[in-house]
Structure formats: structure tokens, C-alpha cells
Image 1 (spheres, rainbow, N blue to C red):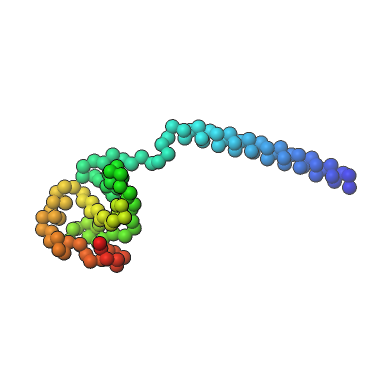
Image 2 (tube, rainbow, N blue to C red):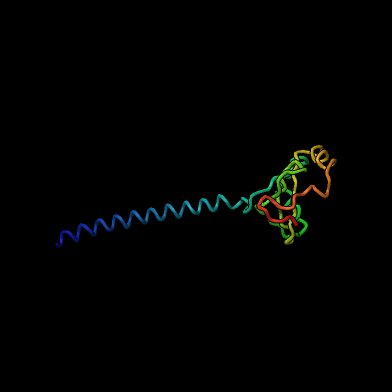
Length: 131
């Protein structure tokens, strides 16, 4: 019996030493990752808006710059008469539909023959009424 205790004691100390080495290696890796990320911004950088290449995020950031509370919503509007789908933002608890065109000419052409009374459907893609 005494021999068995001696063996398990030596095996236990090897396991303890291995776990201690592993803990030191993981702690060093955590410190290295932390130091590496110190110079990086905490939020992803939104690309600069270029005329004709705007996306919904550019509209959202512009509204936020005006100190409005803005959140993107999953529902939108089908293309309809406007030719592009409407993407919904909620700005200060009010729905705002954004239509992003590839360029100014496409937007101008879509709005030239637009009838304001029928331009927007009565309901969005989920069937909720458009406010």
C-alpha cells in the first residue's frame, strides 16, 4: 500500500507541474494579445462615405452625428415604384425608410415619374402598416 501512495504522489506532482506550466503559458498569451490590441479602436471603423457609394450604415451614422437615437430594423419595403427596396431605420422612435440607389442618375430617374400617392405600399414586407 505504501508503494502505491508513493507512485500516485509522484504522478500528482507531475500533473500539478504540467498544469502550472500551462497556466503560465496561457497567462503570457493573454498578456501578449492584450498588448497587441491596445492601439486598435474598440469599435469597427465605418468606411468614409463616397458620393454614389453610400449604404444604410452611412445614413445611420449621419443621423447619429445629429444626436438622434437611431437603430436599424429588420423589416423593409419591397421595391415597388421606387425600384430599390426600402430599408428601415427607427430615428427617435419614428420609422424612417431609406432607399439607396447606385448613383444620382438612378435616383433622379426613379423620382421623376413618381406618384407620391402610390409610391409607398400600404404595408411593409412583413405586412405591418407603413407609418
